[in-house]
Image (tube, rainbow, N blue to C red; front, side, top):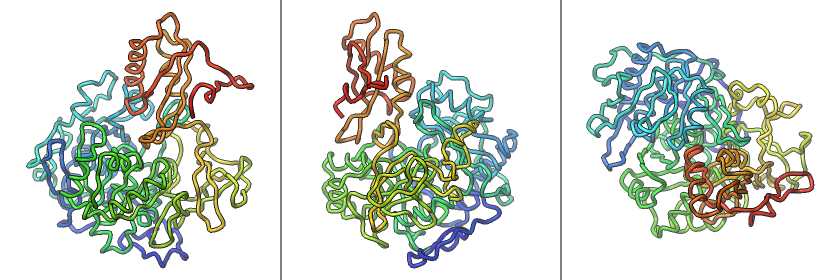
Amino acid sequence: MIGYDLSNPATDDEWPTFQWDIPATFNIASACLDSPATRTALRYVDADGAGTTITYGDLERAVSATVAALSNHDIGEGDRVGVCLPQCPELLVVHLATLARGGVVVPLSMLLGDSHLEHALEHSDVSALVVDHRKAKHLSVRTPSKTFVVEPASARRRDALGGLADSLVTDPANGPDEALRVAETTPDDPAFVLYTSGTTGTPKGVVQGHRYLIGSLPGYQCWFELFGRETAQESRVWTPAEWAWAGALFDVVYPTLALGGTVVAQERRSGFDPERATRLVDRTGVTHTFMPPTALGKLRTEGVDDALESLEVVNCGGESLSADLRRWATQTLEVTVNEAYGQTEANALVGDCRKAYPAREEAMGKPYPGHDVRLVDEDSESVADGEIGRIALDPSDPALFLDYLGDSDATAEAYFENGLFDTGDLAVRDDEGYLTHRGRADDLIITSGYRVSPLEIENALAEHPNVAEAVVAGVPDETRGERVAGAVVPADREADKTFREELERSVRERVGPHKAPREIQFVSSIPETRTGKADRDAIFDR
């Protein structure tokens, strides 16, 4: 199994003897560009439907040119580069070039509201920002002096991966002739700062090392059932998720490149569109996809009732997968459906792999090879099978984060006294080792795969001058799993439709549309529990 040698993916019969063997030096860029130059690295379809194919050779030349450009801008070892782009070749090039320079990538969602974007830019202290031209037009936050706006490039130009504006990168044909030079980094050197959704009100910057890719690979192989180099190379893997979060980057993009497969990408200008998704699968021959259950559910509700010929495996994560939806996908799409569990701080820990063991509809699977996952109580003592426990992880796991950027207290609080990492998630284990998720240990809302902190939305509502009090909770939703619901006590304002729409608009601008409440009710007061906390159950139908 992959623990150190990316050139030889394992077969499932090696699982019982799996051991990590982490190399002394490792760089994600080198690992992802170590395939024959003529093999296809990326199949891309832009928002207008134009497509192009990019080889590993094309990709390496573009990365090499961008490395030279970053050097010319004095961006190098240890510098953080913010990247706010949709799924597109330019994003991949800037990521890999930054890593090759020994820098640190800060992925930024196109959905971020100004307040969160400003926080991420200031908190991460980026040396440069690469931003999509559409996002740049609406920015009202202070950006670094080295800000590069990416204009759209035609499909013809994309064949050479040109088009990054403001001389950040030149056309690879005019780039340096020498081979790509990659900085020597260790597995523990920082590679990414991945911002959480703000589970305590303010997003944390999760610092992940280059080892994060190594730690994610066993899970990737298991849930996509890609064992053996030839099998992995023939895969064409796609996710509708933004390339700004761990689930897209380390469950799809970088493991696929590291194993020599083909990443499929599609730029979009709106939410998940089932019709466009099915066309993409048919057009590009997608074989494997990582798809949040919400997106899979939309395929069903939009009437997709035929098998997608090329599709073999669907991996679901980010939120719970219902037994009914799993059955529909298995029977209608005629695919293998595997569920997996992980988080930004610790990726690809638990899940299904039907080649190794049968899936159970209510369970999320078993720990993947190399991951010492335990269930413990609040004192970090192991709990018995059948009892709810907190999911904990051995601190030596390479999939585990390095720290929270600039927050040593939060980093320390994430660990039990005995050193185990506390995920904050709850689960039950049966006598055969299957784990069933039992939610969060807090009131985290998971809506359409996004993790939303009630406190974050409450604070956004409270910023309005006509809000006296606000409380937020997740309520069941057949499409999203949960939807964000709010209750507001008005202050000197009539509780009418106009005020409700004003609040919804205000919150969308502050935190982004994916986190905004789907419903807001007005109340005269917020009921409290006996301990003085807001009694959400007395307000919301949960």
